[in-house]
Amino acid sequence: MLAILLALVLVSAPAQAGTSVVADDRDAPLRFGLLPFGSPVFLFNRFVPLTDYLGSQLDRTFALESARDFATHVRRMEAGAYDLVLTAPHFVPIALDSGHYEVLASPRQNLATAYLVAEGDPARDLADLAGIRIATPPPEALITIAGKEYLLSRLPPEAPAPEFISFASHNAAVHAITSGLADAAMASNNMARLEISQNHPVRVLSETDPLPAVGILANRRLPPELRDRITDALIAMADRAEDDNVRAHMAYYPGYKAASAADYERFRSILPETRRQLTPAQDTP
Image (cartoon, rainbow, N blue to C red; front, side, top):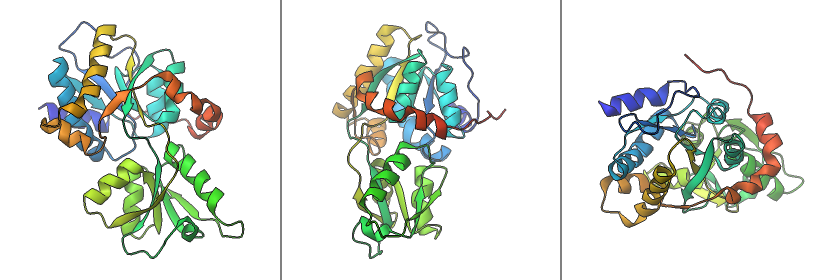
């Protein structure tokens, strides 16, 4: 029954500020907002094990929520709609500036843009991506922003520019290779590793320099003691590999570490461009 509820919430349920859990109501689920970097099914499969693990550690229930696009996700986050939120590194300063959130943790592995090609593709380095079709996540995704800049700075001046084709999510961009919609793809290093581990016929050609990973933030309306317990539970995951939920989630994120606002200050320099990319989007009913 819980899984059905979560699946429905993940696909729809526009979040509204002020409608979340009452901190002292232990029967009310904590609303966990997810950046829509993958399809709803992908997000559900990856993060239900995390919320099941956290639920067992905290004796609380969670409702996973996502949004149809990054702009809607950011707008809900700014409104303080979520109790917990997993968001992109360059969206963390936006969440902090809203006054609703504090940073708790981030994955132990840094983020990077991975450049993928088909398993049998003869490409040997980034120069071989000149003039071809490259699938990307949405244009406002950090993986896309950093990946384009890194690639274009390394192509020979005389090389033809690639054709960048935006897709709704990282996994959709990767699958565009095998569906013939693109010749190469950019995606997060986590997504690249997962797709390869699941025998998707792609390989990593190269990666950008590392960047801070996504952030998990808690709403300040949650009691400080609960925020501390959530942080402790996330950090302790790496020592609990015998837990089935931990193993399932760590196939994507290999453990968490404590994080702070200072880890994401570097992204303030691109806030104007980030906000420009986040074109207005209307919630669906």
